[in-house]
Amino acid sequence: ALFYSSSAGGVYAGAAQPPFTEDTEPRPLAPYGEAKLRAEGLVRAFGERAGVRTLIGRIANLYGPRQAVGKPQGLITQLARANLSPTPASIYVPLETVRDYLYADDCAGLVRDATARLLQRPADAHVVKILASGQPVTISALLGHFTALGKARPHVMLGLSPLAGYQAVDLRLESVVWPDLDERDTMPLPAGIHITAQALVSGLQSGELTAR
Image (cartoon, rainbow, N blue to C red; front, side, top):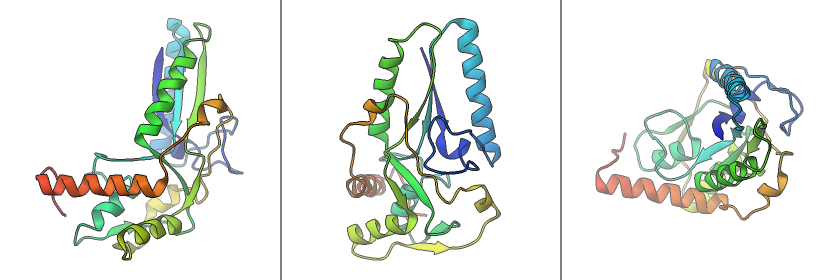
């Protein structure tokens, strides 16, 4: 079997009528989303030619410990790092922007179980599944979690960017493929934020990371 990690945010950025499901017609806005959608097609074509089962995981916003901090992505990691740094995190989208945040270990569990389910299907099976928490959160609410955990306002700067045009305001997600796999206990967002922040503190203390 072949698993491909795609991006729900990338392929559904321009889609209409959230929440988006596997039945929603993909409509990427940015080159990144277009590349992900093309790659999905290549994976499916390879599976059909080779007689290999394929699984496309359209993943929500991943977060968790040890996420790469050198890239301007992963809002939870960027916010947690900014609270340890003189440099604020930059937010270029409206605070009412809605995202689905999925803890990395929860995503790994979904990938494992979906792959196991795929292996029970015919040899030419091709499945697309959204991997998400199913819990929409606004950026404003996310900042509220950081305030509650840190007992202080998050270190952020609001601004403008032409890249904001590539971002959907409402990216609610709901999987209708193998929904029983989503019926599991997942990491509560406040606890996941705390674990992510503590991992950054440990990284700074050990010298693995530096304050920017």
